[in-house]
Amino acid sequence: VQLQASGGGLVRAGGSTRLSCAASGRTSGSYVMGWFRQAPGNEREFVAAIRWNDGLTRYADSVKGRFTISRDRAKNTGYLQMNRLEPEDTAVYYCAAVNRGLIWSTMTGVQEYDYWGQGTQVTVSS
Image: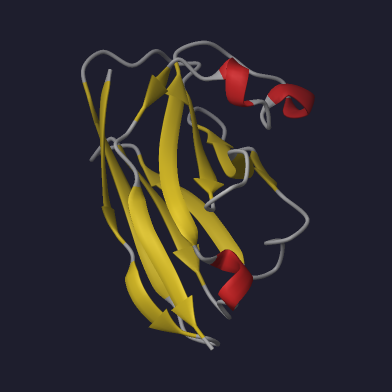
């Protein structure tokens, strides 16, 4: 599976942007896509994830109510809609995927994902 992330850029605080992650290659019915982010000097952290077959989602507490993860199965593409952005959201955002089922409690783990996109920068100015 290859992942190609796009979107992001420079956004003012309070604004919105949308990230996309197009997947190519063979995906299973148990496919899960996640979004992670990494700010300078910080570890990579979980943002959101979605299970492809049933649409189950999970969010980090820091983005709950502001970010929405979704998928278009026909296009094999996942999205992260980011609203009410804050300067603390500034980071490189990575999409990731795994071709096996994850239960809700394991969707947040960096180590659970086998495939990673190249990362896209989101900078939120105050």
